[in-house]
Amino acid sequence: MELMPEFDLHRPTAVEEAVKLCNETDGALYVAGGTDMIVNVRRGIEQPTALIDLSAVEELQQITEDADGLHIGAAVTLETVSNDVRVQKDFTAVAEAAAAVAGPTHQSYGTVGGNLCLDTRCLFYNQSEWWRKSNDYCLKKNGTICHVAPGGKRCFAAFSGDVAPAALIHNAEVDLVGPNGRRRVPLTDIYRNDGMNHLAIEPGELLAVLHLPKSEAGQPSTYEKARVRGSIDFPLAGAAVWIKQSSGKIDELRIALTAVNPYPHLIKGLEKFTGAVLDDAVLDEIAEIVQSQAKPMKTTTVKPWYRRRVVGSIARRLTKRLSEAS
Ligand SMILES: Cc1cc2nc3c(=O)[nH]c(=O)nc-3n(C[C@H](O)[C@H](O)[C@H](O)COP(=O)(O)OP(=O)(O)OC[C@H]3O[C@@H](n4cnc5c(N)ncnc54)[C@H](O)[C@@H]3O)c2cc1C
Ligand code: SF4
Image (cartoon, rainbow, N blue to C red; front, side, top):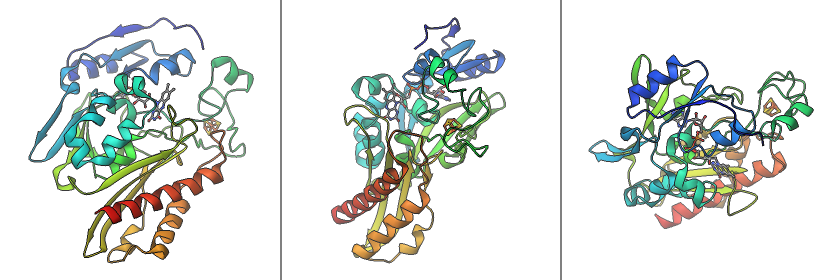
């Protein structure tokens, strides 16, 4: 780790002020809990001239509820989200995912917004400056080749946030605030399949609110991940599952993945199971579909084939468990 470099620290109290500061200051970045940003600054991965600290912006600290659903401010901590009884009851996977991030100390500082906007990760990228320099850096920063897939020009760093897949299965939306105002978009729209540039938001745009719709409330959902150290670790592979059943048959099934692609995403093609009874053959087919859409690369110390198989197993197990419980 490098020493902390020089930078200016701004502590705005309103969203618009934060956005203005970020957009009018060359090289400025947002920081919320800082649990990822500060590590990246000390590794020389991020070199901000200024950090815009979001912890004093009141609008971002609140969870509110109305007829549309639950609205979670971006700077609400993961600890608060996981302990909120409304989230636990109506959006269970989101509470479980927040409780699965790192360990308790990270959850007490780490925020929902920081988790959703987390940078992608790779064995060759999340290293100290001297380590990356002695390996000639890589495409994602300062280098010219990808050590994972040397022949190509793509980056396969994996998005490894826990909360995104859980929010995706609940058809969550987010508020983005930029210099041109506020817009509300489906959460799925802010991600793209590109490890180098996985956030499809405008430079300087701030994620202000995570909306969890009332229409989705109360349906059974759950999240689980595989990781090296159970007490504190990023997911090697994670899956969130949402299910709606009637008369013992599937009405709708949603599964979203994390840590096995450069972006968190909903599994495609699950509508074919509408009306199906969840027997072993159907569960096997679901696991196969999940595995076929997970494309982990050599971005962790754990082999890609294991991560692909384990994500299929997690999705199969969670689907069975939710179906039997509902
Ligand atoms: C040892 C260790 C283990 C970890 N394990 C996990 C894990 O298991 N699962 C996991 O998901 N994460 C893990 N993390 C990463 C991190 O702790 C969490 O993802 C946390 O939720 C990040 O939130 P934060 O508020 O601290 O974000 P910050 O570090 O403050 O910011 C993260 C990124 O988001 C941007 N950002 C923050 N808020 C906003 C906003 N409102 N709008 C736009 N951009 C924003 C920042 O500019 C930065 O790029 C781990 C980190 C460490 C150090
Ligand atoms: S996948 Fe390749 S380009 Fe991307 S961070 Fe890893 S080594 Fe670098």
